Amino acid sequence: KGCTQCNYTGYNGRTGIFELLIMTDELLEALQKNDHHHFQQLVRNHPNFENLGKAALNMAYAGITTLSEALPFALNTLN
Image (cartoon, rainbow, N blue to C red):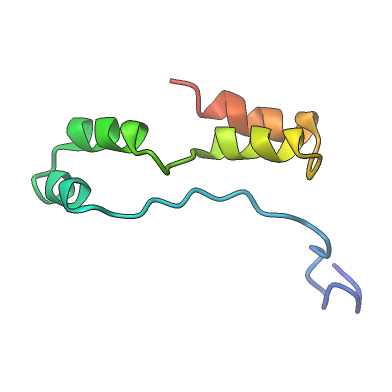
């Protein structure tokens, strides 16, 4: 249930893994048209997008987390 160091959250010292997608006009247009397939293609080809799996593996490579912690995220994002 936590302690005073983690303000009773149980998460002191943990690092989150995130996806961040900066919306472009083309991405927004695909969403507005409910063209999910085209949207997914655009996301995969977006130069600055890093999915959760790749972000987790990069964190393991950098020594921020372990490969055993990162691997479930990487395996879950395989197409």
